[in-house]
Length: 253
Image (cartoon, rainbow, N blue to C red; front, top):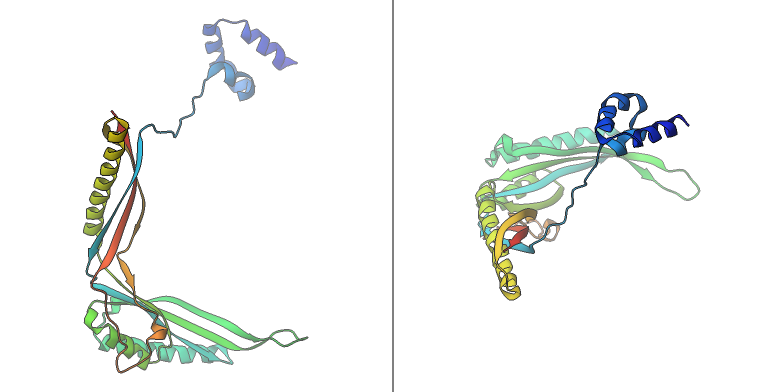
């Protein structure tokens, strides 16, 4: 009832009186009564008028580093025994890597897990029969001619868990800049074809969005399928790809 009387009184005031009332009464009455009399809100729109195109480019370059994920998995009835066995093999693996010229900074632990192994029998609750311990290392190899030798050395030292091997470029920044330039040129060429067909001209870009980029990474074949020889046979790729994709909106002139 009180709010109705106040609202009616406000509606009979001049605009000047209403504006003065907003600053003095608003703190007392709250937003409910006076927001509509004191402010007008305009929401922004995300719509952009123009020529919407995509642009992409692929830049190729020879890789300069290889990265492998290699580790040891052990099992024992007691967790401490499984850990001890694992530690011994991982230490031997690290020594083998250092002897092959891998720097300590290029050997990093990526995961360490201890998990119980349970036995399941019909009509019986599961029983813990032992523990699995896994320790994984990420190893960066800078001499690509020795990848096979280094991988074989880790296997000889006790590695029994190899997740994969990738070849890449350590600093892809210059390649990314080159790929962005080419992707933008590709987008502009597409927009000009559309504009010419429509009888208009392409203006300046009003929105540029990099939607994705990939690489430069190339994966080797599955190591499980390679077998183990004097040295694991590894053939580094001659080139890896870096891909840039853009979404661009150009003005219409």
